Amino acid sequence: MRIVAAVFRRVVVPFQDVFATSYGRQAQKDVAIVELITDEGVSGFGECAAGPAPLYTEETIATAWHMWAEHMLPRLMREAWHSAADLARVHEVLAPLRGNPMAKAALETAVWDAFAALTGRPLVQLLGGVRTETRSGISIGLQPDIPTLLGKVEQALQQGYARVKVKIQPGWDVEPLAAIRRAFGDISLAADANGAYRLADLEHLRRLDDLGLAMLEQPFAPGDLIHHARLQQAVRTPVCLDESIRDAHDVEQAAAVGACRVVNVKIGRVGGFAEARRVHDACREHGIEVWCGGMMETGIGRLHALALASLPGFTMPGDIGPSDRYFAQDVIDPPVAFARPGVLPIEPVTGVAARVRRDRLEAWTVERAAFP
Image (cartoon, rainbow, N blue to C red; front, side, top):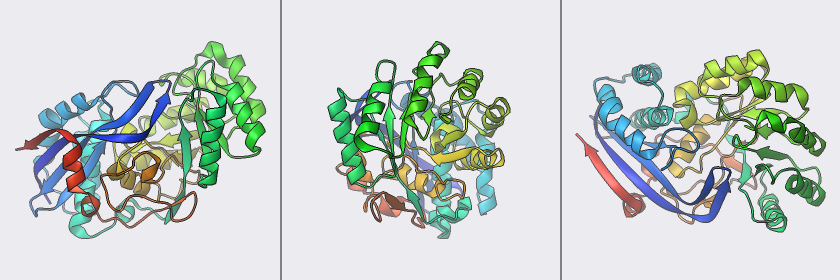
């Protein structure tokens, strides 16, 4: 299998609701999607997790598009992929290019996706997955007031979500979380700070111990492994790392200093399927719990995340939800949907192209380029 052509699309899909975090507010999904075409005429799709602004990481849609066209795609088009073992080489071919994991992940997953479609082998099988379903958690953004937050939590519980995670920031943390505990009792509750706190907030964060949280996700800045370690030593609440973990080496370092007890794995953040699998394996080796995160993906990235969640270590509820969690209409059909409340099926998808609604994809495309 060789890659002979590619189509880059910038797609804007409206959200059902505005989603707010400490990074800002989003009313739509502005995303870059790459389609790779093989010499057999088979298409593979990949979704880039980078947004229009460098908020979650330093990458953006514009930087990803540049890296694809100028540096990454030419390298991939010089290679051939004949076997499942070859798929691990996609990561190696792109490795000499520093950084840009989200851009790399989109191309790598597109190659895997095309190979699955060409060979009829499910992505789950290519990854070595074993699970046929996964429990779904929900991430609730910053809300204008506590009554609105409680309404969102109640709705999530009625829909069957197995874990409720709430975005927090200084000034919006202990009180709203305590209100949820009072209202809903012993539910699985977590908090996600997206790096909004500093070591000076340690004593304040210790107050969260009284709330019995499943985890406190990424309280400090991504590079602060030592400060995360100090926090984890001072609190009973499990610290979860998200932005701090870019690869399996970061897991080794986090384990060495005791920076966390949980890791959130996102395909885009770690650079693709191959590195995500290595991160998963490193976490299991060090006794760190692991779960599959989400980036409010369209159905393309959502199906890929579900395939990753089939690996045996993903025992905690993840942030992968049904398509209608964010979108009235998705770019795939049928959309991702619960098999039963709070549980998503992990389907044996042999590439996502057969599920892509090209009419919707084209209708929502605001920029397009074809190569060569």
